[in-house]
Image (tube, rainbow, N blue to C red):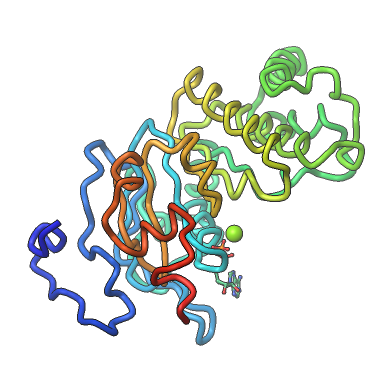
Length: 282
Ligand SMILES: Nc1ncnc2c1ncn2[C@@H]1O[C@H](COP(=O)(O)OP(=O)(O)O)[C@@H](O)[C@H]1O
Ligand SMILES: [Mg+2]
């Protein structure tokens, strides 16, 4: 790819030795309407500068993956999308709303459009599976228990947990807890579902099954899915759009087929798991 194509906004090419030399620089249109946009987002914790001018768009209706090494700021991104963290500067725009400028009650309303699946499923330990999955419906809607039962049972069936609905979270395996968290994230028919490392802590077979499930549920329900992972196999299985995050910015983003064919040395090394390349030199 020519330098002029990499830098459509005419940015200076990165010099050798520049820590951002593998980053393609300017924001690339995703080819669809972006439901989630990070615009020049900076976020530091003390001296730890995690997001350093992040520009990222996530296209509507697709399964997008944000992929990058551990500790690079992927979970921090999710927390900005749901308004659990605010940028030091820049903007995070979700479904047309600037998250940092929303009032608390507006943020509360917007959150109803999200389903979030945290790393461990984030189930309430004192509630059985049924009550865990029913929780958002009881908290956010006026629905009666009959209607709630219809929705909860349908979602539990969808993730293969219909027979486990009376179990407590500590009686479930890690994979079951993730599927339960997935069922719960879907009960409000969210437009956006966020998954933080759905593949962490479960074996490769269960990871593959969970990826299949995510794909099936997406095909059935639609919506914008954002999946965060450091697992390349999961990305190969389900990603339609990939953003590679490193050192607080996007190295490269685009349709997954394109990313897996990338000539970028960092992207190549990261997506193919090669031992030689820019990663691991520091
Ligand atoms: N609430 C916080 N307070 C201080 N540091 C944080 C906080 N959240 C994340 N960090 C730091 O930000 C960096 C990125 O974290 P994270 O987004 O969790 O990485 P990952 O890409 O593995 O999800 C790490 O160095 C982490 O220690
Ligand atoms: Mg994380």
